[in-house]
Length: 175
Image (cartoon, rainbow, N blue to C red):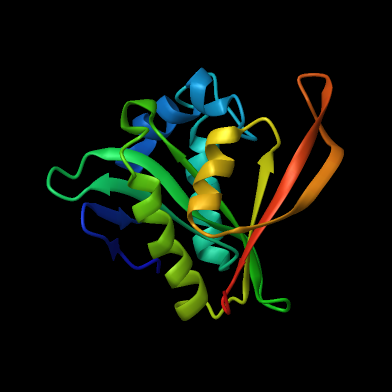
């Protein structure tokens, strides 16, 4: 079971079926999916993402949270860890925020709670971030959170029929 995490302004909680509309709203938004690995064209297709969240929790291969405002409970985004490799004590960080909440420091508040859970409760040593090189906002967020830029994988993936570069960031439990 994924625990509820709390920060000064946020509650990070497990996803529920009632989050489907918000997940669809986020992962169909052109501003969010521009640099995100997945997108959905219908509300029903977004159920795949809900299943993905649940499967990660069930199989202990990840932990993702719905990020909500503390006072109102309003859903503002998602964040979590996936591809947990216990043998290597590492996982990948992922996150997204609805555009109307950008620029308010919410990810700078939510991500440290996720990292703390990963390092202290999941006993991870390394948390990685793979970011499209053109995604300057995400890279700035990781820089502010003291992630280390490790390098660029050139032409690492194909997106929209073009090769894209992927920048690699990491944070270690000893950082």
